[in-house]
Image (cartoon, rainbow, N blue to C red; front, side, top):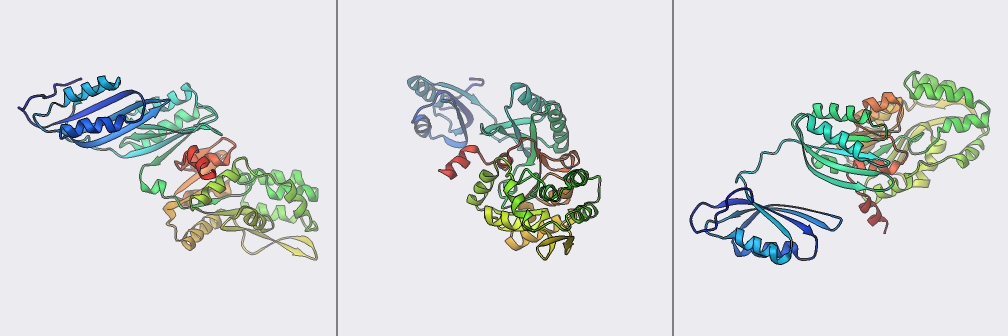
Length: 399
C-alpha cells in the first residue's frame, strides 16, 4: 500500500487502485466485486490478464468517506490466499495520449529482438500500455499498445530497431476503429498469392525463361518501365500453344498460408480480390479455384490456338492497380481507408499507397521502404496478425 487510505467516517471520498495477483481460479472477480459492493464503491476502470494460470487484475474504484475498504479487501485477499495491494490514486484519469498499435512478428521473437523494440519505445519517452500475444504459429507475434504524441519519432525508432534484427518485422498503425474495420483485401498475385511469376512459367514452356526472368526481376525492382518490359516479354511468347497454360498451371505453387489467409478473410466477411500484372488465363482460374470476389489482369491475345505475342487492351501497371483498388472498393461500398493491399513489386507501389493499409510481402527493397508495413516471413497468413487477428480466432473459425 503506497498511500494512506481512510478507514474512518471522517474525510473525503477517495479513488483507489486495487491490484490483485496470484493463481487464477473461478470466482476471483465475483468475490472482489462482492466486497466492493458492501463498501458502496463505484468501479471506474478494470483491466485483467491471465498468463500461464496467473492472474493480474487491476480495479480503480471510488470509495465513499467512512467505508473501510482497506480492511475488507485485505481480509478477502487473505481468505482467498491471493496477493492484494491497495493504493490511493488521483481521482482524475491520466489524460490519454494518442495510441499506436505496434505489431512485432518473427519466426521466433527472442528476448534480444523484443528488447530492441521495447528499448526503442522507451528511448523516445513513449509508454507501453498493453502487450498481447497474437500467435505462436506459424510465427510468433505480439501486439503492443503504445502511448505517445511522437508518432513519426516512434516510427523512425522502431524501423531502425527492426533493421538491426533481420528476422524481425515491426508494424506501426494508429489505434482506433479504422484499424479493426478493414473490409476489403486486394492482393497481387505473382510472388504474393503464389510463389511463381506466371510469365516465367509460360516462358519456360516457350524456351525463353532466362531472358524473361531477367526482365521480370528488373521490372519488379523498379529498374524497367513495367508496361514496356511486359510487352517485350509477351512478344517472346508469340507462337506458344494455348495448352501451355494448362501445363504451367500444373506447376503453379500457392504461397504457404494462402489457403488459411483467404479462408479466414471470407469467414470474417471480407471482400477479397486479386489485381495482377500477369494474365487473365491464370487469374480467372484463381478466382474460381479460391472463391475470390474479383480478379483483374492483362489479357493475352490468342489466335488459332496460340499466343500472338500481343496484349489486348490497357496494361495493368502501377497506376492501373491503384485505380482498380478504388473501383473494387467503390463497387463493394467500402471506404478506401478500410482497405488492405498486399504486394511485393514496384508495380504494386501505387496500390499499397492508396490502400488504408499497404503491406509489402517479402518485397523488393524499394517496396519495403515505401509500404506502411512489411512481412518478411514466407507465410501469407502472417498478414492476418497485422490486422490484429489472433491465431486462436483463426482456429476457432476453422472448428
